[in-house]
Amino acid sequence: MNTSFPDKMYYKIGEVAQLLGVRTSVLRFWEGEFSFLKPDKSSTGQRLYTKKEVEILQEVKRLLYTEKYTLEGVKKRLSGRGKNFFKNESPQDTSRDQSLLLKEIKAELLALRCQL
Image (cartoon, rainbow, N blue to C red; front, side, top):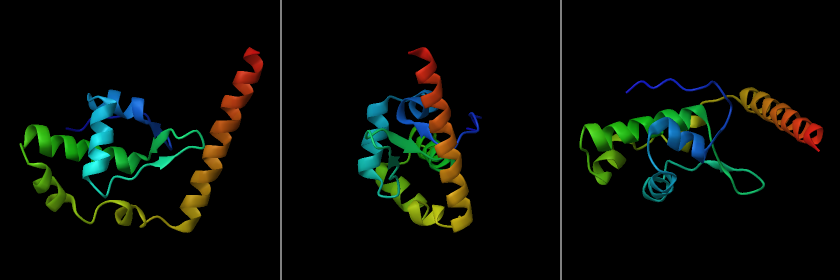
């Protein structure tokens, strides 16, 4: 399954659910089952998934639904790919990502202000 999705820094849980064709409750369930799925949360508590996390979720879905793996089988197959897998990014990439996120937030706030 090689679903293409928009190139963004973060994806909200509803967007990820729509991209993968599953319910948001399924994503929250997987979060509880797979220790390597730990999306960041915004200040309002909204789950924010990175592109790499969405790719891992695509793999989880494929293994569960297409390959018919059990939850335990998926855990064994993907162990070591969670947050440790994402730590391959350099600190410079992280600060650049944060800068882009702040620019996105600023643009959204300006758009909201114009609507008032």
